[in-house]
Amino acid sequence: MNDKPAAETAHPVDLYVGARLRVRRKVLGLSQTQLAEALGITFQQIQKYERGANRISASKLYEAAKLLHSPVSYFFDGLEETSNGDDDDGFSQRMTQFVATPEGLELAGLFPRLSDRRLRRRVVDLVRAMVDDDPEPAE
View 1 (cartoon, one colour):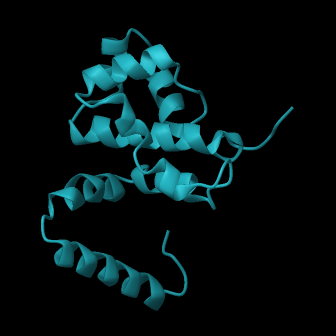
View 2 (cartoon, rainbow, N blue to C red):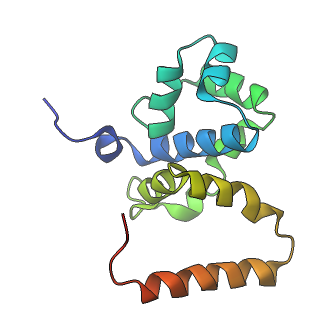
């Protein structure tokens, strides 16, 4: 029996796809229940997909992409740049942790709307400086 949480045992690709599903759903303002009903599954299943605890079948991913007005490729965009085979240096887990917070989801929705590349860079630099100045993360 495996006692590790799902996020620690899930395949990095499943974590990444689940995180992308969550971001897209939230950007469109859909609840887990609304998406689940549209897909004919339970909201608990959506939770498992988003955490990477369960893999999304190809047919469900296709249906979700149509419902979320995105190409199936959206769920994999950027994956090849973040991983080397099965080892992604924890990127998928960090991505999942980021979108698991309300603030992370809000930033994920707003950040792409910053059209000025220099401004986006300044935001990243600001956050990096704040993290570097904070020796211990606040809970």
